[in-house]
Length: 265
Image (tube, rainbow, N blue to C red; front, side, top):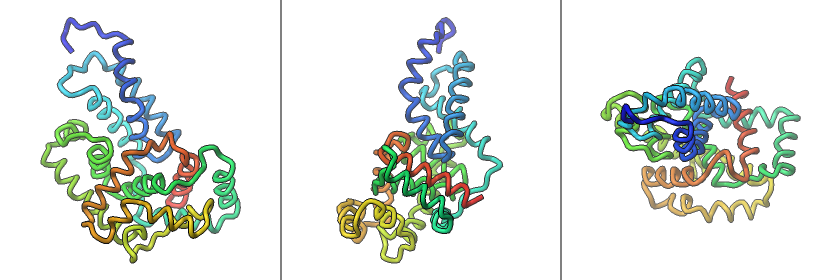
């Protein structure tokens, strides 16, 4: 912004309107608690408005806005521990051993307009859960690059690190995620220990219908012939196509996130 540019509320609102939806979904995926993500989103917008006269246009407004949000979210999560790789298993065990939670899961699935199970949405949910096992800077770099399409230099500005550090964070994050999915995801590998997609799909569908839906996924079709890096890229494309706060299964997956938090302390 030039010194003689008069910053108006309308200027700010127009810029926010373009990016608020992606900012909110980013913070939700990062924090994995809807009300907390909403609070951080509002805090981000308030802080951005208060500091808008300092925005000089050296980076895009989106990069500047996400930098504020990412830093607030990091501060919010600083005292919370990372999830383990088997965090979803702990969620499943808690629901299975707690009658009222199992009943609530069934009620959401059968009664909520947004409680329907969709296998691609669950791939998004799974990606979010697994990414929370990463070092927090790796998680941020991965989400910003592979889900929200920020360039390496922009991620460096958001995280306040060099491009070399960003490349290192991305390499380590992708390698870790690829290896976890290869060994856990039954969609990808016969050795995979996690069958949540089939089990949750069974809430609404027969076993035959479940297998038919799974077999139609391009990710599954490619699983026997593609390298894990390619499979990971296909997975991120699925995740990018989904808004976790505006999907037919958002209530179901938000409930699962709440129980995953509870099951993992």
